[in-house]
Length: 258
View 1 (cartoon, rainbow, N blue to C red):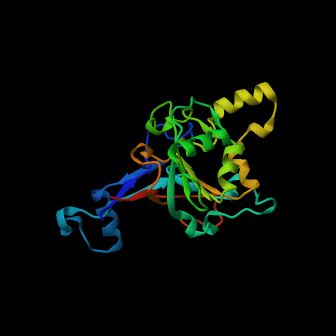
View 2: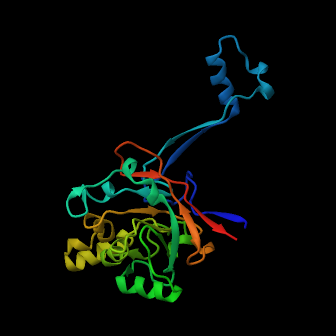
View 3: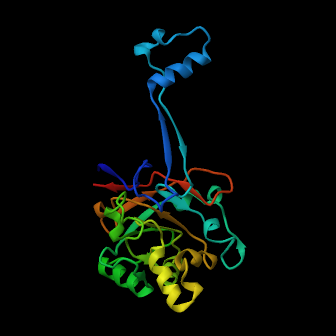
């Protein structure tokens, strides 16, 4: 049996609309000519002409947040507590067995921008694809934002997962979820309007804040979920190990046996 690996991560890039203004990553590239100059400083007497093709190393320096690019959020990002009062775990404490599990894809591309997905929506989609959730399965949400990454309308595009939808998943043992949108919750611009009309602060970041009740992680800024079937694949999303951090970057992939 052959194995197919599908990349479901986005690259870190300069000068694209991947995050709100001022929160984008900044990458400085040093090419081989600059690397040759650096190399000569490490080895006194060495000249660039002595190096093959006059080249040294290529390197990059990056100014990024742990929430740039495809990343895994730890419960610590959502709140200081989880599971009803326990200290929330940080990204270096996330159990690795959570990060390599069978995947399930929920197709919510039909929902309008700003829509808050309910438990009934999740249940209906699971019934449509004929799947019963099992503990530790990784649930990925395909939204309208998936094809807009890097475009000016990316951040405000897509639906979001509400508190009850999130708890529907986590109460059934799901510990990692994911979305191809900028946030697990609905885009802030829509939540701000709902808050302005209701003054109900419980609407703000409600999907994230559900982690206070049942601790879980989610992946944000996934990509290419359209290429996945509803079930029948594994997801690998091991995070970079950053001490006491709220998130870590991940090269998330889906693995299919074909």
